[in-house]
Length: 376
Ligand code: GLY
Image (cartoon, rainbow, N blue to C red; front, side):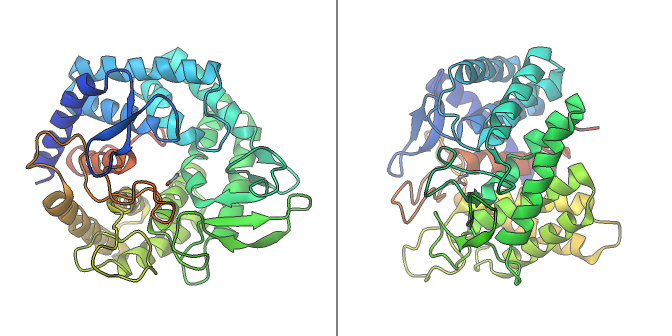
């Protein structure tokens, strides 16, 4: 089943290269095809990542050439500082430039990845001891805000430390990971989407949400970012607290899955006919759990528990959400959501859902991860 699904995903990606030309798929257009983006959001790295994964799966240079073209456009984005005044620099530059470096050792790609890491560290706020997610420094609303998604951005800093030996990258990543663990994860292993600190003295103010149902609820994609992000911090640091927090967040996630194993957009949202799902949250959590399983020791009972959860989730995504019967659909997974309360693509294709679904398939079929750390 996984090989067939991967073949479908790769072939759809092949067809999409000519459709998208030099633009990037973003989110669905009212349930239809992908809106195109010209480096306008945090999402463009996922298309590059799908091209690199497809190249790895097939060896077909059509994918490689298209992937390299995207990296060149990421160079232009950095040189012109286009929509880079936010923290999502890891999402953009790891699956694009750093992937090229990882696969082919291309020096210009490594240099671009390191310059991107320098953009990210500019968001470090020493008074508070965190990476500011959104907005300019000192912004009254966002200046003191971290968000859980950033756990997938800090691997760019761990990687930059590995490449350069410059401890500044490591110290920023470690401090931010620790702040996220202490303040974004609640005592019952659920999570806040965002947390505020006093900008002057770094004192904690309180948790809240931007894309979740309410401040005290758990946005399912945020929980998935936590599962995957913390195990990536463990992978780089070998600090067991990150393995444990990822394990606990994964246990929370799978204990609240609905009957068809694919999450609604928030764990607390009332479930009624038409309540949107977020298939991308489930795909992200599957990648995180597969990474987690690789990090757990032989004989740990959670290995079997998480593998079996991944199989159930991936089976449902593949049988009930994949567009395999519709060759004209541009997206892979139906029923992703971007920002339900904000009315942004509440029930659509979302490119990050497609990327993480494909990454999970590559892990299952080929045993290779994505581009969040270098393979040995
Ligand atoms: N990182 C933004 C999101 O997950 O919607």
